[in-house]
Length: 368
Ligand code: OSB
Ligand code: MG
Image (cartoon, rainbow, N blue to C red; front, top):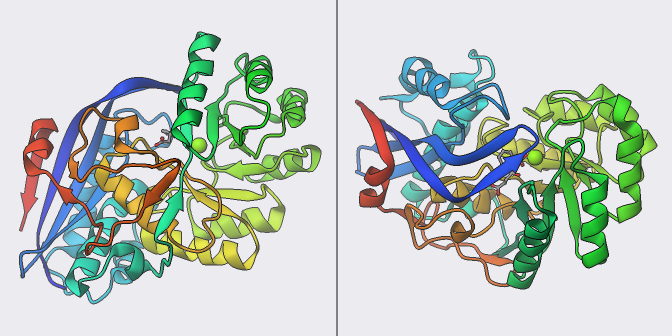
């Protein structure tokens, strides 16, 4: 493949509903799309899953824009690339900035699969034709609203419900949820809102038969999570602590958790995601694919990686309509009774609707 042109798009896209986590509320998604084009006129698409502010992770949309423009795009433009794995060595001298790296990595994987005429899932080695999905629900001020959201999503057939928690919005909330829904597959996500001083609160969650507690402690921490896991019956799932293969290896060695949520962006792209997948499979650590409130482009990549064997737990890759009035891809991602059918067209298997893309684009830049 020779990448002859790259376009970066900065989008503002309003979600149907606000989404509240322990770190804040988001409704206006501001993120980037990267389009890589080859000589033959094929386009590969990737999403930079940043937000306007660095609240979940240190990167943010404007920082990634600079990272892409100044450092990453010059590394791949007009390069001859046989396989997307070659980006690892082209990017490795630049530290972190995984969300920006992932935007190009995923676009090049899409282009690669399209140039071979095969679905991205197949290019990655995925074998599943359907995947199971769950849904992540934000914190609500009013418990009745939360209970209604859970009921709606359960009725739609989602395979598990994930609830965001934070201090003061934890044990009492989950107690009410379990009263009404005693047996649904349920988990919680704290987004790093606790410390080891809160161990008694976290231990109280053990009574609710949760599938897991996602990222209770500081982003990046592995040591305190290992200490905490020894005191909890509920498995800990790591999100903000896993940025690389090395993080995953160390987390497994330390016993920092029993499950890993892989986000393609957070680990720097599909090549790293696949490498972490293979390690976790060998080490019997179950995986699921996390979400970043993506547009259809990022969602399509999440679907493709989830077809790998060790993604055994339902992920956060819900239907387009859970987030958007109208997604920017065609067809939109649909979920039927918690089951998502993996597309079979080449590459990501969805077409970007250029008119819809442009409706949400506030700035774009072409490199050639
Ligand atoms: O921690 O998994 C998270 C959304 C934004 C940032 C972090 C997280 C989330 C979600 C929503 O939980 C996942 C989704 O529905 O895309
Ligand atoms: Mg999370």
